[in-house]
Length: 347
Ligand code: SAH
Image (cartoon, rainbow, N blue to C red; front, side):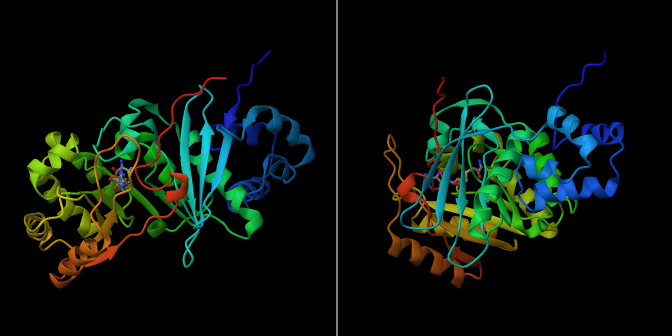
């Protein structure tokens, strides 16, 4: 007897085989896909869109969920919710749903369990690197969050790869996930509503802009001085600022480039740092985001105070750069940038 394995709802080819053997008409498949990805329906509701004779095969041989939602923490001060998921092999990862007072409901998702970049200011780096997330695990964060916000009359319209991990060190799964989020027949998010954030891996950034020309790309720069950046971000030794600049020029010719600059007291917030940043970015059309440091247990680093951050941003604006000051959401639930950290919990 033929043994049939379970195929993922995100595996288009394998799902086509299940469709075909049940002779489901393409328009019914469309209803099924719309239920899952556009209407945020649960498994049973999605199965109900299929012809009755096909339901049991789909129920048995199609995998709908890949992560178990263990905990949900809702911020008391802003619209952030932190979701802690468990993978099938017992790892914990986090996603953060953001409901800004004005603007789209967004999700910040993880691309790896832990991270191998070891940036000195990031809590995720302290947990080390375990493994890449699969395509199924990346997309299930969005699917589950979408179902969660549905009763609020919301839907996830914005996805940022700024959770745990370095997305461009897991390029195959991340690129496939981005394509899926973008595709009209699946999540149908607009190109400008998906942002990948990277420590700066030039060859992968180039591949990204070639594959997704109009999509924003965010670079965690944090210093335009090579020696300072190397101290903060070990990856900077491998990919020096000169090389990164050439990539930025090419990327900004294709789509929107955002530069993230986290301000650390006495480390990257002085006059020399400001001048180096202005010189480094001169002539490249980027959007600058000045970020406050989110403290976490075990870190000695201190953030630059708000008035100085404002001053720094004002000087960048005066130098002609499109600059915004970011304020963190989710700080009371340790859901802000760089605060995501989880240890493996086995049952
Ligand atoms: N690895 C990717 C994405 C994950 S981090 C990257 O480095 O871009 C998302 C953003 O949060 C990055 O800009 C990162 O530098 C920033 N970040 C990390 N730790 C932080 C902290 N403690 N406070 C504020 N921002 C932090």
